[in-house]
Image (tube, rainbow, N blue to C red; front, side, top):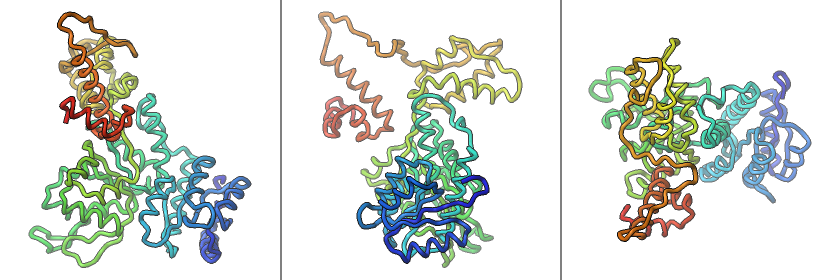
Length: 450
């Protein structure tokens, strides 16, 4: 589709009446429509024509809509696909989103929802052509950061809830903002909420609003954060901090796409995309019973892990330059000596990018020369094992050497790193180490790490 040529949609459904209804609706929107009665017919049309959107039923004779989504993801990755699902089948909708569909519409087809979905898809196509944002929003050329940027580009086309995991200070909110900025909701509000910073007694009012007189101090109607984010994105930071009663209310709001202000008898429809994040292991909290499993499944349709700074050390020089330029605010700032840069590259950064920013801000204040020195950085004491990649320190056995204890220390160190890398997710750590979950539990117990 050129800037002024009409858009064209492929409509796939084995029911002729539904195909006709959708095609008529699209034509009233001045969008061309081509229909197919099966996934096989759709694939044949895709090979011959260019489309700007595909709407496909999920259940069809022969190959399913999910099969078609997979085919499109593989051969036409820039084509947005929306799934038509049976009414009330949220599991099917989640399946579709995980397969790569950017949205879904339930049967019987609500024409208002269909028009909104189609408009969103057209905005995605236009924004893709204009390369709506720079890929440098998230700095770094490491493999980990390139992978994150590629994943974000795909997630931005979806309406699926995304759970962003990672250590404190890794930039989870920046990732959430980038997903929002690259999607069709970019012109609508992005509303971040720190779930751990709101007092429990005010939480319901902050999320859903309240009406005048609903409680002492409610002197006027107040809009909640869900209403403020209507049409845009709601980012639930530190979602693990939500108390149980709010988890129930949040789940209902997400499922019903509506909120009820405190003191009101009326529900208000809201259209928000939910992104959430925490530095804690949510799956472990579910096992403990402190986080609801049904809410976890609803917000964790897609998981995106943000790497720690230790996992992308090669990005540190670029980040240093970027932070120092920002702190200088247009003035000439001192550079970093080679020794200082070497010290930063070999520092483990438990506080990640946030800690790097704080260290550099302090160093600028302390620096009295033309270059920032290791002394200006004031890095906390830490153990630095400076070896070449792939090189190991081999012990020199003597009469007191304990081989079993030495091997256990190595095993303990590797397992600790695997747990750190997976945000303490034991299942993921076991996969990373190439062992079973049962073997992982055995080793943790044997090494007294549980």
